[in-house]
Length: 98
Image 1 (cartoon, rainbow, N blue to C red):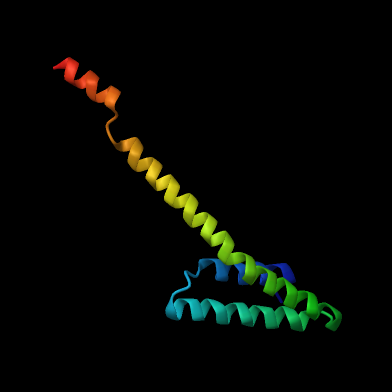
Image 2 (cartoon, rainbow, N blue to C red):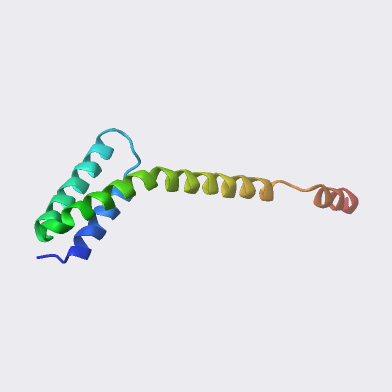
């Protein structure tokens, strides 16, 4: 039998892999629910509410985190694009070399 932490890690990893689109999102969600139910069976009844709060908290935080990662990725991509463009100093040196 898997340990509680292994089950939780698998559930969170599965949710993180989804992109929120169509069947893939549904599949990831179903896997998460299955993992939560398995964890619930392993926990004493007095911890079931804590598990539900953990799932709710993660569900509320995930879109915020995804937005931050998206914005950072976009900023990194734009920085790369601009770093690849010739700069005025480099262009002046090239003209002077000719």
